[in-house]
Length: 433
Image 1 (cartoon, one colour):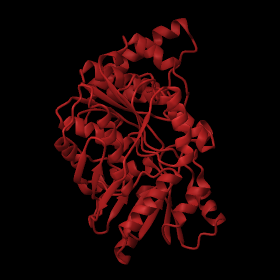
Image 2 (cartoon, rainbow, N blue to C red; image 1 turned 135 degrees about the horizontal axis):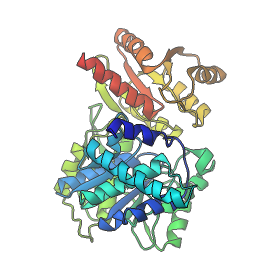
Image 3 (cartoon, rainbow, N blue to C red; image 1 turned 90 degrees about the vertical axis):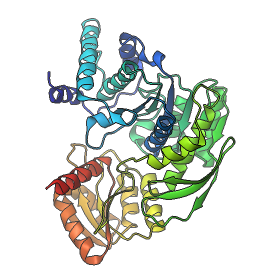
């Protein structure tokens, strides 16, 4: 079987089907001879920022000289983005080999248990666990896919658990109340293991602290920070004032105050494992943060006119984007689209507050919300700006860029990571012409 055929077979497991529970992944991991016993992990959950935190931690540990596995989701363009070692994607050969072994395990189990049918995410998670074992990583950084308590990654026994924040997303699965969502995220807390919390809001913290107490662990909150002025659109500077380290003039090559918060969370998590064999120097922190790049997160793709992409796909993330745009004094033309599993109306209201010019676009995936339904929502709230149907990135983006050039404005694509991936691809193809 070729790589492309193997991926198609994997996608037939339905990339968007969600089955919460640990039985399938436990069975797969058992038949793979428990790869998680071969390396320590850091486990990260949260509504937003968990991918950025994972990347910061991985970059810092890599800078220190460790061989670091990194498992994140979703991917923007290439499936192999999900599974990396020292920020190098898994090879097609290793994907093909790993999926072949896992498929053999599935078929063998189905002979005994006909109902055994792992999901796409369960298979990919098993693939990551096995690959990290085969490549003998020193440590693996694992990002949850959805929630925490019943997420497939939640069979690890981490050096430290990290919860970035609690917001409203996937409410049809995790619950409509913030307390319910917090409970699900708190499911990654392990008994007598360190816990780092980026979340500081009272209601969410109450739930997280209550669950931490049950597991006999005292949560560590990320410290406040001193943010420095930085005129660059895609950089931030700040001081870290922690319990172990005081680090001045740290620099990120990622824009937005929320990325400073994510960096603080990453550093605080690393402070908690200094008593283990994983020692980290202040210089590795400084270099690792500066080298971290996380595509699709307030990412400047081109100049003249400026084109930003941001994977803001829930209300909290859109609120962060709004704050960043104001801080950077950017008046954007928006390309906006959503998935059909989101609480659309609050997000539409927030998007409407960002600009007086919006192009409605639809991602090329089947769970994308149609531009016509999106248009109805903007009409429902009485949006008074210019509203245009761009249909797709390929059709809408050239028109938006032309308008931006004339009006000396920037274009910002947001609302969906799938749209972000399609935009990055479009720009790459255009530049290659």
